Length: 254
Image (cartoon, rainbow, N blue to C red):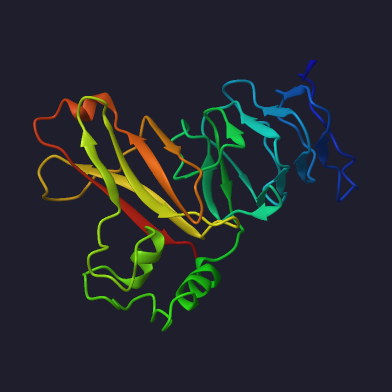
């Protein structure tokens, strides 16, 4: 059963809590700009936020939690800022999160719709990098070092799921751009608690000057761990260019 709540969900101004929990296998649609300031939890089924254009204005200091098998549909344009994002009991990294079709640099199958969540608090890449570095014998050096001398820093080896001890492991592009399908594939780090790394895309037609940001038509993960493969679909307008250069950038969340 689907339920739509078009009214504003309010909280007594004197209250410091007042969250929203979605239980049951059905779908609940919250379409108004709500004023509750507590956490939002999706324990079962589907919770949809927004009216197709505007978000429901979740509190910037509140957390969003999505249980295993549940779905949060972000039915709005743009982004909504929250504190922490927890999916399947695991904290996700700070950054912009959304569905595979949202254009967000961080994607998760528990999220659907065209909107995004801007997460301000999450695990740092530093702790995950340390665990990764210590899994090698001998351990990998500093993030800024280049243990295998292939021109990639240890951080980038980590971020793109490469082997920091092998100079032949220097290219995360697993499938070059196919102009017929408009897609390319690359590998990147994907741990259960996320990696604290944000990924972005840029394009150029000349290899000179600044590289404009590229918002993919879609990006789909194969959901593997600890290294996933992302299929990126490039906008058709760019594919019409006589020359096109693309790059993927990884940056550490602070």
